[in-house]
Length: 349
Image 1 (cartoon, rainbow, N blue to C red):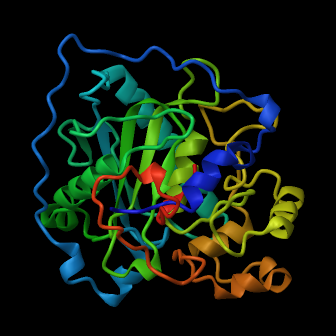
Image 2: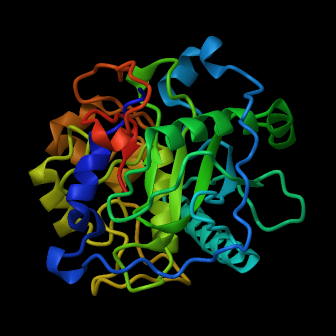
């Protein structure tokens, strides 16, 4: 079975640290009413990958995965997941909202990069007709969502295969880059998360993607995930660590977390919520601190390098397992990812 956890399980157990809100400030609310179709959408044809990335990856690809550094031209493919089991689908108005939030998040990334003297080149779905960067897919596996976002191993494996199918030579030729990441939009309430490639994985788990839920399970009934959440998850794709209690990164300890909260109170990798626990939907009112900028490769140094020696082992844009060991396959093929305590590749919400 494909295993992927350390970060995700800790993240959902300590979600309030992740969002920057106190535990008593947010409670699990009833799931909002979601759009239903009269006819349940039929599952899409099983994906048939057009290439086998694990059979000929370069040393660089094995190190970074499908998405490299934020400063490199990168294609972001939006895939809207319709849930056959629950009959929940994306309406055109809901898609339009996510595009607006994605555009807000990407614009903020550009602005933040400029403060470090960097210019970004991110290709994403802007709503153009027949865009190759916007797809729909109905998985065979059910979509769960919920407070723990414990999506099944079957669904994640299916998304891996879909990613391989969508990464085509034509796409690379059109945009002039082989750097690609996927944004899977799920039509339910949940806590968004990102699946990244670890250097220790080598040929395995090459494709990197974010799972972005329609609704924020920790917010008021029916409140969407915010542009800040989109930006937070996008930054994971390019090597940004979580800077809150429960982070999977070995160098993120209590001392560093306290330092970030005191010196960079608006750091987006510490919290996506405003100080009062609300979310903004027309802007991203956060910053990329010098520490996160260093992890992303936006700058080649940061003040924290002298203060926290473990940072010296960080390669910008690259995740590594704390024990230096690649993830393993248990071989049972049917266990849910959430049932296994070793789910490498998940970086928090």
